[in-house]
Length: 302
Image (cartoon, rainbow, N blue to C red; front, side):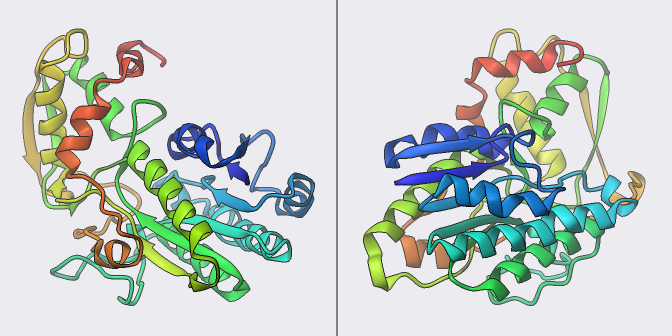
C-alpha cells in the first residue's frame, strides 16, 4: 500500500509518518513539496505518487489571522481540499481529511454528533466547512475526521505555549468557560492508521462519511493548563517555576475570532463503525509529556 501524506511537518503529519509505516510505503510531503495555496499543482503531485490512500494533514490553522485572510484560508482549507479529493477519486484511492470542532457554533448543551448541522462562527470554521463540503460533493471513497484542541510535543500548540509562558510569568490567565477535549496528535495518527487498516480489510463494505475523532473526557482551557502544570512538576527540566493560574471568562480575553463555548464531540459513531475510542485526555497528556522534544519548548525561539 502506498500512502501519501500532506502537511508532513505539522503536528499530526509528523506523527502519521510513524503510525502509518506498518501499513506500507509512506510518501510524506511537507508544505515546500505540496503547497495547498497552489491548488493547480496538486493533481500532478497526486498522479505522480500513484497512492492507494491520500491523507490530508495540511491546513491553514491560524484561527485569528484567518479573520483578515479568509480568502487564503478558504483556498487552502476549502478549494485545495476539493482538488485533492478529486485527484484521489480519479485514481480510485481513499481520501482521508481532517476537520474541526470549529464547524459548530458551540451553543449545544451536549457533545456534537456527526448529524448536527454545522454553523461556524469564525472564518477558520467556515473555511474548514468548505473543505468538508468539497470532499462530500466530490464523492468517491473518503473519510472526514473531525477533531479538536490538537497538541503535541512538537510544533506550535497550547501545551508548548503553557510551558514556555510558565518560565516567563508569575501568573497565567486562562479562559475557563470554553469546554472541549484536548487531543494528542499521536492518538489521532494511531487511530488514523487503524481506520485505514479496517477500511482496507472491509472491501465493498466501506461507506464514506464524517466521524468525530477526539480524546475521551473534556475540560476547559484553564483545566488543560492546570493539568499541564501538574504533569510538568513531575518531569525534571520542564518547569522552572509554577505560576499562579487565574481562571477568566472569554469576554476577558478578547481575540479577533470568536470561539465555540462547547467544542465537545461525541465519539459514539467512531466506536460503532470502527471499534475505536481514544483514551481520556489526561492519560494521553501524561504520555505526551514524556517526550524529550518538549524540553525545546523552554528554549527561547524554539
